[in-house]
Amino acid sequence: MALHTRDGGLVMPNAWDGLSALLLADAGFEAIATSSAALAATLGRADGRHEVTRDEHLAHARLLGRLTGLPVNGDFEDGYGDTPEDVAATVEAAVEAGLAGIGIEDTSGDPDQPIRGFDEAVNRIRAAVEAAKGRIVVTGRTDNFLQGRPDLDDTIRRLTAFAEAGADVLYAPYPPDLDALVAIVTAVAPTPVNVLISPADKVLTVAELQQAGVKRISLGPALYTHAMGALQQATKALVAGDLTTATTGISFERINDLLARGAN
Image 1 (cartoon, one colour):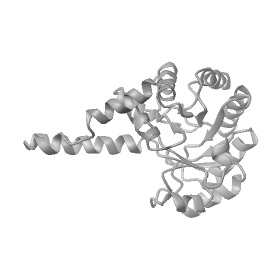
Image 2: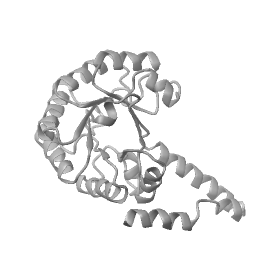
Image 3: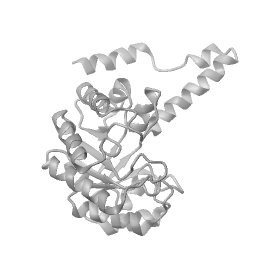
Image 4: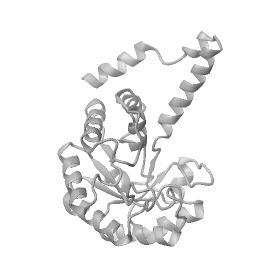
């Protein structure tokens, strides 16, 4: 939690495999996170439907931590379970796996009702906090904005209740604008707020987000999609017969150097 409460907070980028984690560690980041969306994509599966199992995600997070030695926050969808007891079991498993943090969403996995009811969502966060016993940072997250529910009042109500239930960090991806973000930060203070890149309407700088009171900035699958964008451009060059452009990247010497550090 110390990284969240210091001046400026932290930027916590999301890795999707061992090499990406090592690159982030080598760049000097102090903590990293998994991305459920990026992990699912690397396995050819969809996010948010438990198509990646809890055990697979735990093994993935352990790998990132072992290679880098950094604190790892697990982006664990809805806590892998329909009941508060299931969420508690996931938190306990994350603690045993050595994770530093875990996120619990109020999503349901049901396309017809993607957001769980208020009481149910709060009870799940409370169960996560009780299972954590201060051993792991619990992030309470509402996906209202992501799921087409642009209700700022309900979002603040949920986040406030998550804080009252004991959540260490609060998170509502993509509030509509900076004013909404500031309203969230103000309403839940002093509990730290995580932001996914920026508000929905404009990508801000790290300094601007810090000025707004944000304490943690995560990137979700954005670094992964950036890398896939580079791959897409390389494949277009390859189709056009341009081998030089298609094969430009970091050297295997650099890769082997990073892997050697992870092995040690």
